[in-house]
Length: 298
Image (tube, rainbow, N blue to C red; front, top):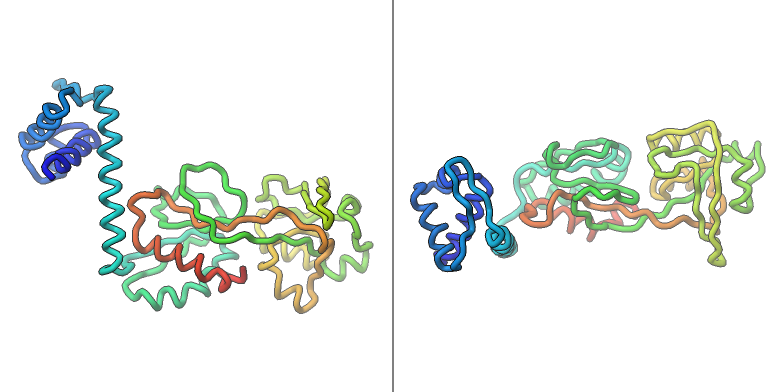
């Protein structure tokens, strides 16, 4: 146990850059910190730190040992969190970042039972379509839809979503309804500019044939609700998530076209800053979203 304590002290020394700073953080004397590190070095038979009057630098052995110490601490923290779940419940403020439209139409309505279950928890929704730095913005969890870019964050898939091609009856009355994807080049395309390639469409046909279509149009937006309104207003044909347009399909304000063709499924993800030290409130809401995804219309 003393060796584990000394390993944790060694990590604090490296993280805070000095024995005195580590001692202040740990609430012990500087000499006690120095003694613990010296005992580690004696037991290992090698020097872990180069000490000067101004700074500390890790030796090659120290870098290797530091990595092992961090793994030990992460494993201990993970074990404590798992066991602690039996006697603890989520509490504090849970801050979630999510696009305006998805938060209002799908996420927030399903979180009512979750909040009822955990009365010590407060909820804050950051309704934003922008990609943000989760750490700088102090966001616990982000809900993101689409193909994720490399960010260093951890992503856990909640479900796959399907996009469909849609148009208004008024538009189709004025223009011939396309029967083949190639015919889309003769139509106005309403582009969702948050997509990586808003004017390209990749479709898989009923017989497994793949088609790539270059599109054209005069209406576009970086807001999915605006794209939806443009399509409803008869400005052209577009593609949106099916769950976004179910009411319009059911009451006839929109019509699905080329229903035999589909795009690659789009993932919806729970994104958070780090795998280790995951707060119980974040773990609980992720598990809840996955278990109850049908409540979001997925």
